[in-house]
Length: 102
Image 1: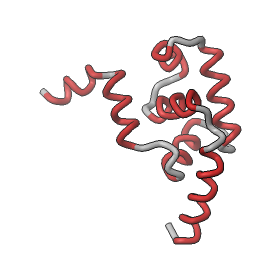
Image 2: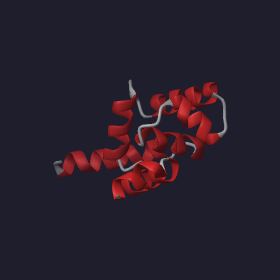
Image 3: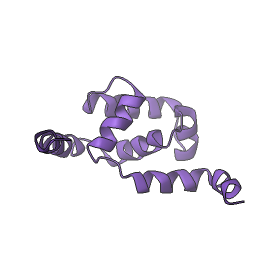
Image 4: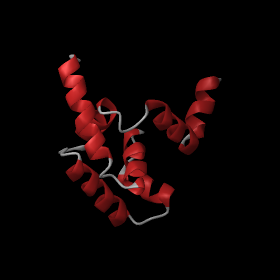
């Protein structure tokens, strides 16, 4: 990325990041792990409609139209940390990593 784009994206992400609630950040991280709404609702112990509402709110705040765009914007803007996402994924799907170690 050019320095101009990087600075613009950093300023944009800082202002947008402040708008996200802690719950929205958790949902964003789980979406980045590839979990669907049903899985996220089960993991978080909330209703599917709650997850849909939180995801809709995050997408609106970050001006994204779909999950793919949401994850790309969040990663590029530094709103989610790849290491943290991998940690969440390992915590929620340990069986995938146990098989890979064999």
